[in-house]
Length: 254
Ligand code: G
Ligand code: G
Ligand code: MN
Ligand code: NA
Image (tube, rainbow, N blue to C red; front, side, top):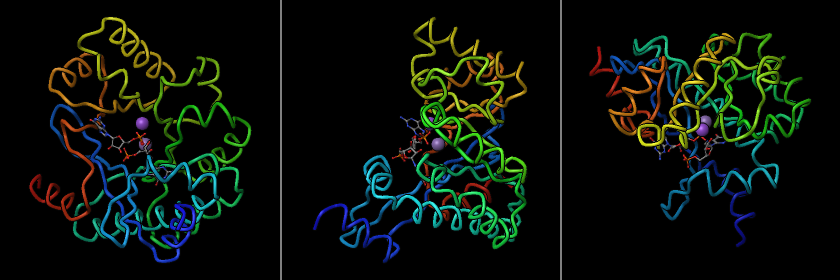
């Protein structure tokens, strides 16, 4: 069986599940939202990471039904947490450019929001910087429509592409997610520190929020706080975890 056919069957049999990684206020560790990250749990028990199967899902177009399942599942989960009185979290969901090109994305998002009853302002659509730069026109049309509905848009892996200041001002983006390649060496490389500080200052000036990704150490957190970064994500705070473990964290904090 080729991986291609296996993935097709996995869509039919619904072999996917979501893990969630907290997005926190770094001073207190308070969770303000989560990012949904899909996993493929094969019938033989093997867990396959999205880094392995999302590229194939994009090539085959299977990312469209997989992406719809991800969004519905993530918003339904958020509704469940609301009913358990863990209200107010935001939900970040990754979208690939193949989904944007498909055309039905805004309608699909509408359906998922209606079905779950989640306020659109609590949904964050993440798109990678390189996807945005390659497909700028298609991207812009789709994400303008999502933002009209109140959905916020995050540029993922920011700093790995090469968006200019002018582009950033014009693009329909609300949040920059600073790529973990900068955060990794921020305490060792004065150049990475300078780039990070400049990116945060620039984002502030443009009215964008910044989330630092890949924070693994207290020293990185402290430097990023000093640079003015108010939201963070990374193993220092929590790995991506199943929904039940996120519930545990929420209960501890109450
Ligand atoms: O969890 P992991 O580090 O393996 O994720 C690898 C990549 O897969 C990340 O860049 C992430 O953005 C992407 N990814 C995770 N979940 C989804 C998803 O539901 N849809 C899409 N398109 N990409 C995802
Ligand atoms: O590209 P995207 O930002 O969507 O990728 C999210 C992926 O990054 C997740 O699969 C997650 O496992 C990984 N990740 C999250 N936090 C950290 C971290 O602190 N260090 C490293 N190395 N990877 C992380
Ligand atoms: Mn992401
Ligand atoms: Na990222």
